[in-house]
Structure formats: structure tokens, C-alpha cells
View 1 (cartoon, protein in one colour):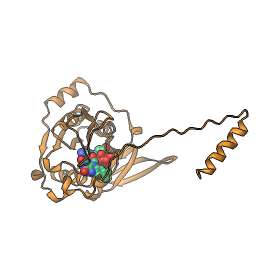
View 2 (cartoon, rainbow, N blue to C red; view 1 turned 180 degrees about the vertical axis):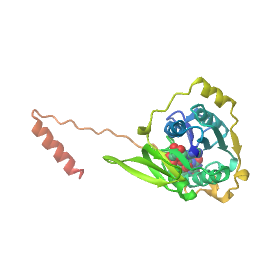
View 3 (cartoon, rainbow, N blue to C red; view 1 turned 135 degrees about the vertical axis):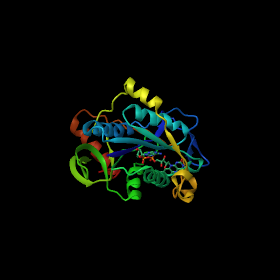
Length: 264
Ligand SMILES: Cc1cc2nc3c(=O)[nH]c(=O)nc-3n(C[C@H](O)[C@H](O)[C@H](O)COP(=O)(O)OP(=O)(O)OC[C@H]3O[C@@H](n4cnc5c(N)ncnc54)[C@H](O)[C@@H]3O)c2cc1C
């Protein structure tokens, strides 16, 4: 069984700088890390490999600048087998559609994967769109919010997914894409052997030409969405203190306050 894990390198800070002209993130001045939520996807793939044995091979794929190799190596140190970085000036400024298009074209190019894992969302873009969009472009089933992998056969996978107030069990045919949530596992800390393996593994870089993507669907020029305005939300704390001796009066005043503002 071949598993692909899609990972993104994200800024290791919440003080993200934006280019106000292009609406894109200035990544070169920031420290970066493997998207914390992608570690759960990596861990689950590695657990499947441990459960099923050597017949499972895990490939990490990321689209990003050259320094994203570090994030791929972090995933390899956790137990993945190899990694590909999709990197080309043409990919810069991609929105979620262009990102998913490029990732799915690379997946097709690299090999057939029975399973594709993604994190729930990237901590910078935070749309959660890339996983389902990759699945749509590959025309394979997708299960989001996966919180437990119950059973895998050669042709199917049964998982639990988180829903409001509970879980539901879903079985889908393979190949399929799963986006996982934090509840699924506890990501391991890489051991020395893992770190040594990551150090000695060469991450292959694929360009637009090598993947064979249409340039009008990649990068900024191939992105149907644009950031048109950026602003910091104004936070105002116009608090009102309700002073009363008994609880009933306080509750009545609070209800009245919310009613007036049509909050209830
Ligand atoms: C309306 C809009 C316009 C945008 N315009 C621009 C723009 O003009 N220029 C620009 O630079 N950015 C732009 N972005 C941001 C850009 O779309 C995202 O950084 C990128 O597409 C990934 O989306 P995300 O961060 O929301 O990931 P999510 O969808 O939240 O990520 C979900 C999962 O998908 C996988 N994944 C996500 N991204 C990657 C990746 N690159 N490689 C491998 N796996 C990945 C990971 O497993 C991740 O956990 C825009 C975003 C929006 C919503």
C-alpha cells in the first residue's frame, strides 16, 4: 500500500507579515515549521505502516519554497519513507484551487497512492479547502474530520469522523483522501534513528515542467481568488457592569440587555 501525506510549511509565529500590494504573505523573513496539524496526518500514516508492516510505503509531498525541505525532513524523521517538494517560481501566490491543482497533478505524476492524508487545516491559510479540493481533482472519495482509523483492507478503509455531538462511522473504497483531526493520535517525537534517516534522505524537487501542469492553473496567475483587502479587526470592549444585590435582578437585566440587541 502506498500512502501520500500532504504537508505544508507554515510560519512559526502568529506575527505574519503581508504584502499589502499583492495580498500575499512575506515568507522569506519568517521562521517556519511543519504545520502542527499535519503532524497528526504524518503520525497516522506511520501507525498504519507499523500496523500493516513493510508493505506500506509513505511519501511526503509539499508545495512551497526551497526551505520547505526542512518540513518534509521533519516528517521523514517521524517515519515516512521519502519526500517530494513541488517548487517553482510559477507556483508562487497560489490560492487553494491552484495549490490543490498542483498537488493533485504531482500525486498523479509520482505514482498511484491508495491513501492520501492531509491535516485538518493549515495554521496560516486556515481554509481547510486543500484536502477536499485535491480529492475532487483526483476524483476519489474524501472523508474529513477523521478521528479514528478502524480497519483497512486492500480495497476499503473504515474510519470514524467527528461530527457535532458525536462520531459517525464511514467506510469508503480506496483510493481515498482523509483529512484528520487532533483527536486521532498523539504525534511522536522523532528518535535519533529517524533524524539520521531524514538527514541522509534526498528530497526530490519537482518543477512545473516536470509535473506537466498547465501554467494557467498554477500560481498567482492561475488563482481564481484574490485577497482584495486586508485589515486588522477593531476590538472594542464597551463593557457594562451590572450592579445588583440579588441574582434574579442581574439575570433579568442581562436578558433584557441581550433582547434589546436581538441577541436572543
Ligand atoms: C481567498 C483566498 C485568496 C488567497 N490568495 C492568495 C494569494 O493571492 N497568494 C498567496 O500566496 N496565497 C493566497 N492564499 C493562501 C493560499 O491559498 C494558501 O496558503 C494555500 O492554498 C493553502 O491553503 P490553506 O493554507 O488554507 O490550507 P488548508 O486548506 O487549511 O490546508 C489543509 C491541509 O492541506 C494540506 N496543504 C495545504 N497547503 C499545502 C501545500 N502547499 N503543500 C502540501 N500540502 C498542503 C495540508 O495537509 C493541510 O493541513 C489565499 C487564500 C484564500 C482563502
